[in-house]
Image 1: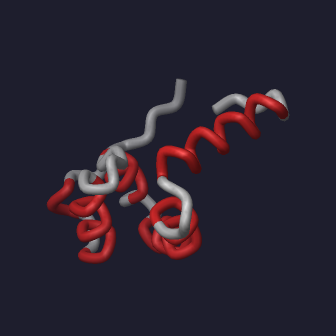
Image 2: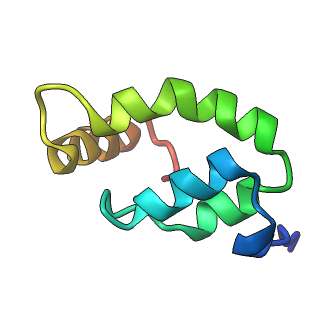
Length: 79
């Protein structure tokens, strides 16, 4: 099985480091951002798209996740 190297927190670029620090408040796994440290520019572009979908809007984050899981189940997708 392939393994992704986790970049130490002290080696993350400033923006990715800031995103990782705020991850705990949003109940996101900070290790995701350490893995993203391998390609920070790509992850920052993804985060600009993903953050508003995940953390903003009228629906609670928990409900969004339940909807995501239901849609994946209906389409026989692994989550």
